[in-house]
Length: 325
Image 1 (tube, helix red, strand yellow):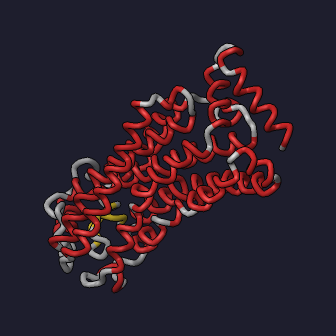
Image 2 (cartoon, helix red, strand yellow):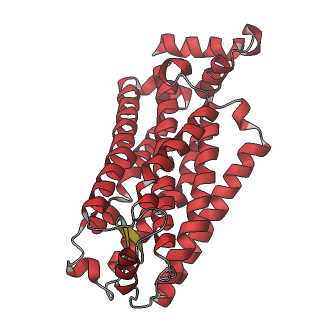
Image 3 (tube, one colour):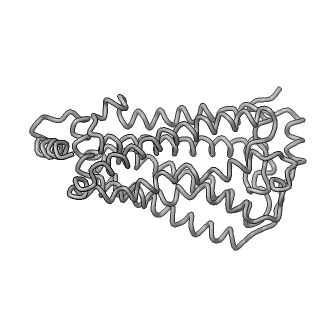
């Protein structure tokens, strides 16, 4: 029997696997400093949105605030374990297969929520430039979408908790990863399809559509102060690529020298690189709040179904912009 309580065979296999690597104190220190910057950035943007009550005026601020909250979970729960493993060279969770599986579950859940929040933000940005009502694309309130993203992500990560063959410690990446068993490879495939590829596909489509709209009428958007937002779009398109090296490493056969490597340092870089979105998100999405502003206000007013007088001026400006485009 295996599930939440592992069989002795699974436990023994986990205990007998490699849990040691070459310690890298310098890389651990760098990762700690960079992660600290990410914590400060996400916490600052989250507090700013709440204190300024931007969620009353901008739809995207709901998803950006939730993304900051999710990033903080990743930086404060997942990253410290990896930093310990990099610094000491010893797996912090080597004494418990269940804790290793919980780490994988949290990783899949958090990364999937991030991908869904990025998708929601991309959708709002597309609405901004395509002049579409929020309800026409989403149909649910931002709060319900945020809750739904956690439910879907947790269900996607559930096999790591119910199947003892799914997770194993990877000495090369200094973290618990997907095993190379049939169950582990199936779990990796489902995670890539539903947690990475599908959200990335729709997000990329939204941002390519935004670029198409921007380049179609550059003079008009320059006069509106929105043309410079194309630089943000370029960075948003890079989002799904950060975790790609980490997933590629976990897909290697467990007997592959790279996956078994205890000395190679570039594999640690792949793990750190996967958390780059948590660190740069406050800068990029914080800038988007101020650059993509007037249109977002009009969309929010429509979503909240305020009286005509409450957003008459914004809506009038919005219609004038639509006529120009």
